[in-house]
Every structure is written in C-alpha cells, then in structure tokens.
Image (cartoon, rainbow, N blue to C red; front, side, top):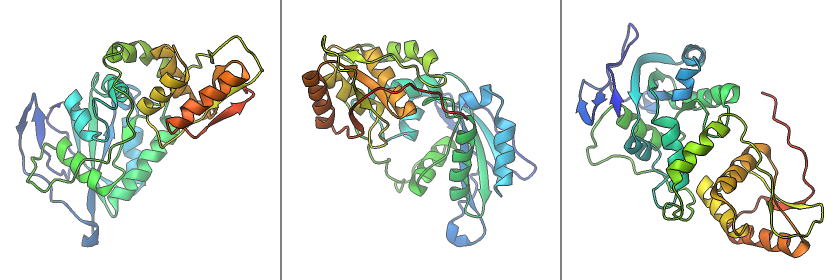
Length: 301
C-alpha cells in the first residue's frame, strides 16, 4: 500500500504511513472504547471513484453532520495484497472473479482514509457509509466508500490502513463468504474483469437470456439478488445451469440480477427450464423461479 504523509485538521490524530512496502511509524492515536463514554475512533475509506467524482467534500460534510470529528486524512493507494487483507472474506481459490473486480476497482487509483472520532463513531460511520452509497453508488463495483460492518473488522482494517503491526492479539479475519469454483484454470479472470469493467460503471447491462434449446414457452428462468451468495458462487451455479455459457455472459447475468431484482437468464422448452432451475437450486440459489420476463427499468436515484 503506497501512501503520502497525511493532511490533518488543526487537531490531528497522528497516523502511521505505509510506503513502498515499508512502514514508517508515527505515534498512533489512542484507541477509545465505547465504554469510555467519551469517544471512539472509526474510519471511512473514500474509494478511487469517490475521489474521481469529487465527492470528498460532501463525504466530509456528511461526517460532520453525523456528529463525527475528522481527525485526519490519509491518502493511500491500495495494492492487491491490501485488498486481500482488508476483505479477508474472499480468497484466491474460491473468489477469483470477485478479487479480479476488486483489484480493478481499488488498486488502479488513489483512495483516502478519513480518520473519524466521536460518540459511538463505529455505528455513525456505518450509517454514514450507507447514506453516501444511497446517494452516489453507481453499480456493484462503484459504491464510492467503505466502512467496517463489525467492530472486529474495524480494528483489523483500521490498523492495517494506519500501518500498525500485529501484536499477536489481532482480530481474526472475517468469516469466509460462499465460494465458487476456481475459474483461473478455465479462463483469464483478470482480462475478463478488464473487458467487463466499463459496462458495470452504472447499472450492469442485460446480456439477454441464454437459450437452452429450440423450445419457446414465452417463459424464462428468472434470477434475483441473493445476499447469501457471492459473484463467484452465483456464476458457478450458472456455469452448471447454462451448459456452454460464456464467462462474460454469466458474469453480466449475475451482476444484472443483483441490480434489477429479477433477470431472465434462460429460455427454452419446459424440460430445459425445469432442469436449469433444478441446477440452480442444487447450488444453493433460492431466489429464482420460472415466469414471464418483465422489462427492466433503471431505478430512479
């Protein structure tokens, strides 16, 4: 993770700096706990698209409106190793697609860490993240900011971003998310992410349903969003349910389903549709069914 010296407010909270693989240390700010009854520390990561779109000022204003104090600003450029540490719920073998997209998103431009403090700063930062995303998220890999969702995650991620070394009592990595098959031996996942990337900077396009056979009932297998699955586990299910589907199409069908609410992913005869639906359910995909496709309208923001 490459970073430059932090720019601080008049009452800064000192931060560590990680530069070119080596860590240059300053005295770290004291960790406040909720039971102190005074203040605690949190952070908000402004991702590359947040900086590129000029949303930093609005993020800082909303943080202050939420009762948070900005103790400092830490410019950083994340590396693939940083991504894997910060989002430890993903691993190379089971989440090669997700990590390829996260690398494309997070490592190709600068980010910035806002160091925050205030009463119950952890919960306030979570609410702040959701508010900013509700206003400005523009696709599954364009959600502009990050804040920790769990206190243990907060400690681990903040310490990494501030360059603090572990002392043997570091919080454990996040619980693994549902994996898929390892796609790396099957196709170039990095090249696929680069190819698809311009298409997912906004509502992902609908590539159209995959044709299973020559039958046509005017119905389709419909796939909806499922928070219990990942990009990799869903694409794995499609890989088996849609024999011969191209990787690009499987990824776009998955991403569009997560955005639209119900995407027609397959058409064909009655038996083909039934077999497709059965394969999805065998892989744990439950938000699916057979019905008549409905036109997709981009949700108003």
